[in-house]
Image 1 (cartoon, rainbow, N blue to C red):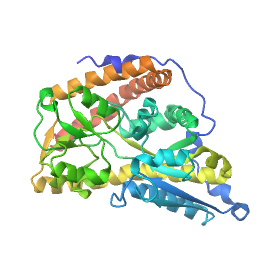
Image 2: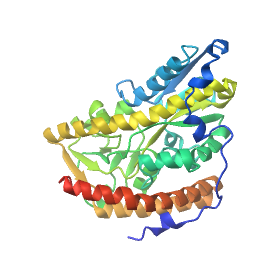
Image 3: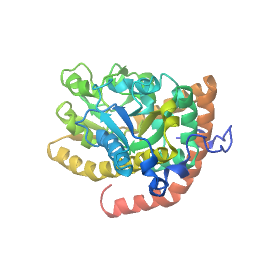
Image 4: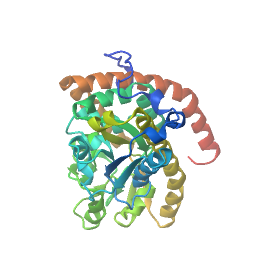
Length: 375
C-alpha cells in the first residue's frame, strides 16, 4: 500500500513560536516555588463540567485528579469541583458551557466539537494518526497545542492535554465483518473524524451518549458500538451486549482528553494558579494513560475467559479505511485554511517521529513481542 502521501507533505506554515497563552515548558514546571506568597493570593472557587459518568472511574477520575491536586497545591485557596455528565450539562455540551461561562472549566474531548471546526479533530486524534506518546510529543513540543488553542481562542477557550487512553479497541459488533461490503447499512455509534470514514464505507453513523449505547446495542437499535478500551467497555456493559470485539481502533490510536478553560476566567487567575492548573492537567494526562495500560490487560484476560471473540479488522477493511482517511483529510485541507495549516504541520511532525520510532520503538517491540510469544 502506498502510504507516503500522509507522511510526505511539507509544512506550509513552518516552525511556530509559543502561543502566548500556553507553553509546554511552563506546564512542566513545578509550582512550589511560586506559592511562597500563598497567603496573599485570592480564594477562588470554580466548577468543572465533564463528559463522563462517575462510573467511568479513570476518565472521571482524571477530572477529579486535576481538581484535588489544584486544591492540595494551593492549600485550598483555589478549588475546583468536578461534575459528572448530566449534573450541569450533558456530555456533548461541555465546550459550550465553558465558552458561555456557565462553568469555568470542563474535561472533555475536542473531537466531540468537530462540527464547530473540523481541525479540532487533531486535538484528540485522527484516524491512522499518532500513538499516545507521539501525540503528547506533538502537542507539547511539536507546536500542536498552540495550533489547537488558536482555534479555541476564537471560541473564548484555552485547553490543555489532560488524559489519554492509548490505542483504543475497534468496537463491539453483533455480527462479523470480514470485508467492506459487510459494513453496508451497519448502524454504528462512532464519533469524530472516524465517523466520516465509516460513513463513506457504508456505515449508518449513530451519535449516542455513553449511558445509552449498551442498551441500544442489546435491543438491536444499533449493530455496533465504538467506545474505548476493555476497562471502560466492561464497566458500561458492552461485553454483555455483543459477541465480537474488533481491534485495533484505527480511528483513535492515542485519544487525548483535555481540560477546557474559559479564556476570560483563565486571564483573571494569578499566574501562580495558572501554573498549578497546568501542572495538574499534565499529571492527569500522564497518569490516565498509565492507569489504562495497567488495567486493560487484566480485563482483557477476564473477557477472554468469558468467551468474548477477539477479531482483527481485515486488511481489506483497514486498507479501505486508510484510503478514505487520506481522501477526507485532503478534502478538508482544500476547503479550510486552518485545517490545511494544521494538517501540513502535523504531517511533517508525523514523518519525523515515525522515522525515529521505526528505528527504536518498532524494532524493539517487534522482537520482544515475538520473543515473549505474544504475536
